[in-house]
Image (cartoon, rainbow, N blue to C red; front, side, top):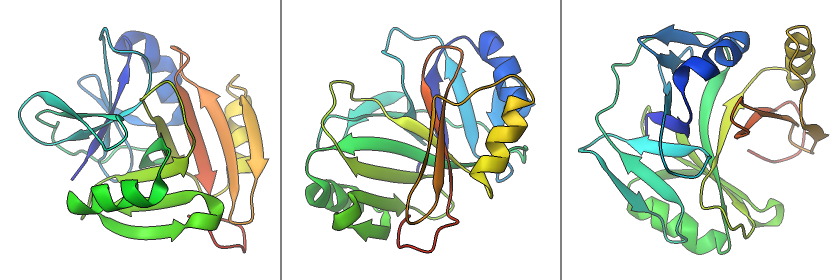
Length: 197
């Protein structure tokens, strides 16, 4: 099951930003409170988040061409900051994509075709989040879960970080940021009373 998220960029340039988020660091790898890793690596790949599955170094693509990596994973270490939920991928066929990820052993934990959102996860792993949308980039968005998105926005503003946008939905609130390399990061809370992830 995926246990890390990989972003393109130099770890040294990302360090101050990730410390502002409160993530723990060990040997250049950043960890959330549950020990899931956020890894930056210089790469010729286009920017964006990629789920990392344990295994020999390699890449594979999902049904719709979204990139995933396999590589030896760092030892899990409890860190800090927000909980790394997983990676959000845009897909054209939500039903077929859900079935494809289930065939890889992930369990469907939320699916609402009306909201164009699905969430799948493996035991102790990170989530694969799917939303309807056609994009040219076949890279994902790193998603973090926080208890209070507006409170999180205020705390980050105090550190000089402004969101790209904020939004409320029936199931909760979202705030989008960009890392120092322009890669999107999404912070969500599940505070709403409506159905949703």
